[in-house]
Image (cartoon, rainbow, N blue to C red; front, top):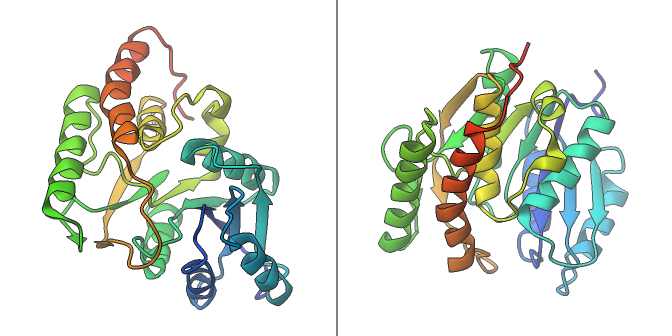
Length: 249
């Protein structure tokens, strides 16, 4: 494998991430393991796309971008990225935020969990070994922690951090899931993807990580996103009673 090719692509959705985007791209490309990056850019008015285009001249074989015409939701951004990654035959496909709440240095640990240790999905987990969250207000920590407990209780998912957005998927997982049938767009999307992978019989593992609240830019979390997760989980569970999941080979 030459220095530019990779079996792994990191998908990073962006909306107004001008303060973070160059730093996060350079941090990923500074890792010893070679990763490619796909930015899903939702029409940021702050010039995020312009910064990425400038970096593409420096990293033409490693940095890719899909520009969309506005803020269309986290779930649709990732599904757009997943389809692109499958078409381009990457073996390992990652989800990561642009704001350094997910530490790029943890990417190789998620990769190892899938490539060496046999997981089909590796989750960068805030809650598998206590509560590893830095700089969040206590109310938000409790909301997130108990949301994960609630999801686990309703769905039966054997996962501590059910809402985590830092993940590695093997190609075959995303190939097996019918991405066009994934219904949720906000943070419930993260739950739905994990639940679907679990019901299809894929092996899911949690890798402990420390989640650090963003220092630059603005959080995209709001109460409607949280509400979708709370009520969406019940709909997800009820739907599963009437749906046949063909088991992964």
